[in-house]
Length: 208
Length: 225
Image (cartoon, rainbow over all chains, first blue to last red; front, side, top):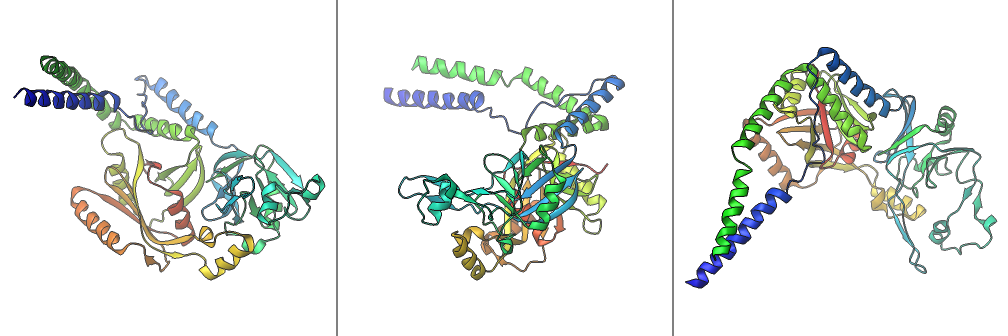
């Protein structure tokens, strides 16, 4: 009898503890729930609150040209005020993985997603081949720095958007529209020239 | 045992008092305020702007049904990164109103995450044989290069709204049994108020929408009026 009572009370304590935990610890706010402000009752103040919020939203939005890279369909577009000024096929990261069997170093070739800015504009760029470019080709990594440079691979122009990623030309134009790159964005030479001429340092780049 | 019963009593007291009359009154007042807010068009505009500002500040992708512009959009930081025009021949004003009404409901929940996604049928964008050659040339697994062009897929949101996208692609069924179950579920849910929009989009547009959206993607609706 004593054992039964003991079991019941332990079970009850555990049960109540669980209920309390759910009630007080489980208040997991949805990432999308936030406190909506109520408009002030005075019409002028209400109008001002709406205008201020509209202004805050317009300040987040790009004021001029912006580049959009759709990694899903491999499309690059140049937009302004939500209008498409130019759209063309591009190639983005393959998602492939490379592991250096000797050192264990690992690379995943994805195009980064998010919000970036054009931070460099280069004409006739030379590619400084990183280590993975040699490892991938089963070549020895050169000790001489000069052996890393390739004047052809990036085409006529390159637009840097951070962390060594560029929008650049390609010698493989037939592969545009397919995700074959090591993370950079390849564009056909004609479209690359148009984009290069139109954008400036600071132009936002949205990648999704 | 007495200690145990004491703990139970105190716990129950805390548990139920915090849900008691004070909380109930607060809840009642809150719903009154919400009702008043929803019925005020200015407040609704303000709520919608606040909601988008909240999403835009996150810097992450979100989806917008902008019925004022008859557009389905994907946005980052309030900038449109993908859009599709909803033609009046495929989506009427009444359908947009019904969808917006259902999506927003009677409360002030303007942002809803995608709660379900189902691909009925799709076709491979590039033949495997071509990708095998390309993959070999560029040292990449051909499977990584393949894209599925959807023939038909569905996105769902809590509150009983769904979007069904069709294309002119002749695809293969991905999971025939699941397709049947999803369709049966839809038929059963309709009498309980589930509301859906059907659109037909070009395959490439649908490809982006299908691949860029995932369960959890925040979505909001700007009603047409």
